[in-house]
Image (tube, rainbow, N blue to C red; front, side, top):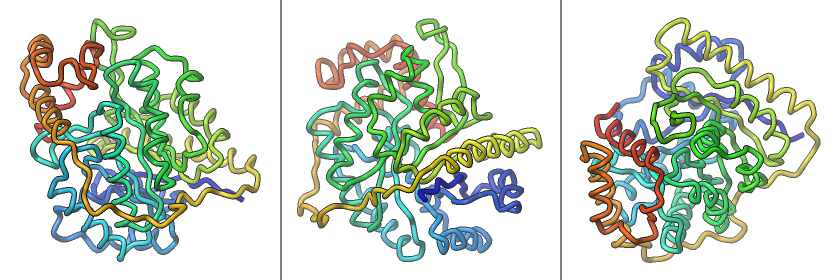
Length: 377
């Protein structure tokens, strides 16, 4: 039977470990998702954390989730080459069931202090994304996937996202992490019916689902004068649990459902109890789905033909210059009005970025995200 596994995103964080400990003790955690590149700058990993990773690795229940690769950077960066080399080394120590990355590019000049933001959906970014996924797959030699993005500048971009993801992963027979809170953000921020949005995604390519919490930020131009942010703080909303119940039966290749939360939001006993309660609620939904599941042949999500890398790495210098300009505007403009003025007078005007159609409240949200990451919050 195709069993779906209930998992947590577990990183080297004292609060996450403390909140997760009762779940580990009760043997409820069936898999662990580890954001492996958050430790690339850590000189020595504690032995107890190494033991935890190895325990799930030996059971083939360890999945890797990247944060900082910056898949769509127009220029191939030294940090990306180092990232691949470190991933290759990690894959000799751990048995990863798969490796995933975030969609988008990282703002900022410091590779580890940037916000993942969207890109134009055109031939150039498609070619770059495919090239980078092939290089990730070549380094890890296991299935690779991408997570759908929570942030979009416009409704048109939201509607194109699922199809673009599908085109990206096709050459490596890759898969999608369907982050349901990210979908929840899109549903609210662009007033879309769930049935309309979900039909734009290739659900047969979903191997993993994420659930998490988030936050609201006021903005007068937004639906109901609020923007939903994927901040991974607080409990999982009831609406996200409802989405989970609805979507699981529609994903025939689903293997993991992962609950995420930031450690700095798990400091009090109340926070930890809610985390525990949310996991049990998620696990109940997964268990019911497993009971109703039928035997099926899963997609391996491994390349259907040998992965042959091109000698030259795909780059787009114009795209890279545009990304630098956008990053600088988002990180330095002191107000929304000034950011609009700078964008209109920049090299991004009248290009595939379509800045002329960006929703005001989403541009302001992008500016807030960039400022937050720049400060390292």
